Image (cartoon, rainbow, N blue to C red; front, side, top):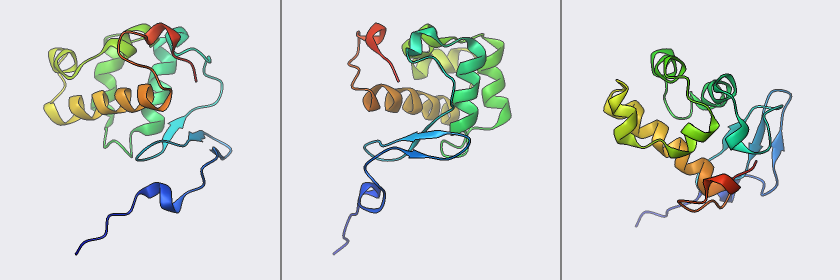
Length: 124
């Protein structure tokens, strides 16, 4: 019989800090939130959204080309919270990166307890 173990069994339940990022505890994995970003995700500028993606690129298997598509489309915080896999595919992302980015966005929403349609309340 295979025993399933959550990553949370092996990490601290309080936020972990290092000199570059704040790692917020999450249900399945860690979300890197670069320091200095506005508390409310809706206030993130496109450059800050890029910081967020770059901070999480390794864990979500994103490469520069994927993040470049986000940069070229000038995605800020408001747009970020509304993106779907289909919309990401529509801007030219391959299925894998589009699904990974959609999951990263969903994870950010889940981590903050934001339900669909209540994006305006989302803060870090």
